[in-house]
Amino acid sequence: MPLALLALAIGAFGIGTTEFVIMGLLPEVAGDFGVSIPTAGYLVTGYALGVMFGAPLMTALGTRIPRKRMLMLLLGFFIVGNLLSAVAPVFAVMLIGRVVASLAHGAFFGIGSVVAAELVAPEKKAGAIAMMFTGLTVANVVGVPLGTFIGQSVGWRVTFAVVAALGVIGLVGIAKLVPDLPKPEGVRLRHELAAFKNVQVVLAMAMTVLGFGGVFAAITYIAPMMTHVAGFADGSVTWLMVLFGLGMVAGNLTGGRFADRALMPMLYVALGALALVLALFTVTAHNQVLSAISIVLIGAFGFATVPPLQKRVLDQASGAPTLASAVNIGAFNLGNALSAWLGGMVIAAGFGYTSPNWVGAVLAAAALVLAVLSATLERRAAAPSRIVAAAEQPLTEPAHH
Image (cartoon, rainbow, N blue to C red):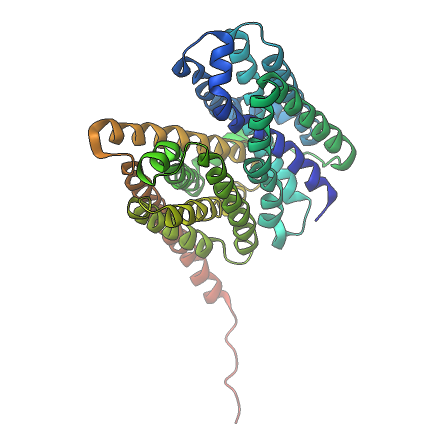
């Protein structure tokens, strides 16, 4: 794999760390600014909304800019946003810093996916995309726990300063290691927008929303589920999230490897297994060992869908894939927000802390149905061309015995 993928992975590591580390530091941030925990939660919501709206906006603005330069510009936004968070004198300024940093997220992964795929041979594209996303998954194993520890030990402002420094390393890496890839000739914003007329692109994005929504329905409420139902101590949630992160790393690399060989079968297996594990988690959540295993499997099967879904969008939007790729990253965050809301509703309705797992199982199963539908439509569309091709074949002489 080219060294350029390492530079992309470092940028992804920084972005993954800043996205999730805030969840472990909300009490410290709320205390410093004198706001409530729910108010501090706007730092999470603001970031997610910034990713959803920033992904298409920043990518559309960047259609006239070479991809390497755009990646560097996005990391510039990321660095400024995290520095603003680190020195924020009041809560409103920190919220602005979070939104500024989030503007880099969707477009970086969207454009980065396109660049990663262009750096390698066609049969290695999903593996290259997975290599970049490894930075995001490793962030959950190393970056988030380490950032939380630093924030709780020497102050949350130091955490965001360190994250900004990671952004600088990623920016320098991209400047030095990523080649100047030529922009596709004649591709304008209207060509990028035309990709959304392709039903396969829309189906892939819907699979992204539902499939990853399944993951976050359970993981959003993992702390109360594990402490109240499984009987873990409060301090155990950190290492349970590390297990989730390890599952994500393994699933991401496995998904990338097998998606290059058989993309749709990989999606069937990952989404089907995810739906099954989430359904079983309503039972296994009552046992500490089984719940820990379930958390690893949710991370693994959930993230095994990411490289194939991202490659599916690139394949179906070929010719002008950048905007579609970035919007698909926003679709992950839409899935996160939707499933967290649905999970909260079933808990509030009195169905208990394990009820979001059922929500997740239904969402993942719905994504599997869409995957089957997508493949069926593709086969039907390909059938007429196969018939024409067969009709145009010259008649062969019968074999002589």
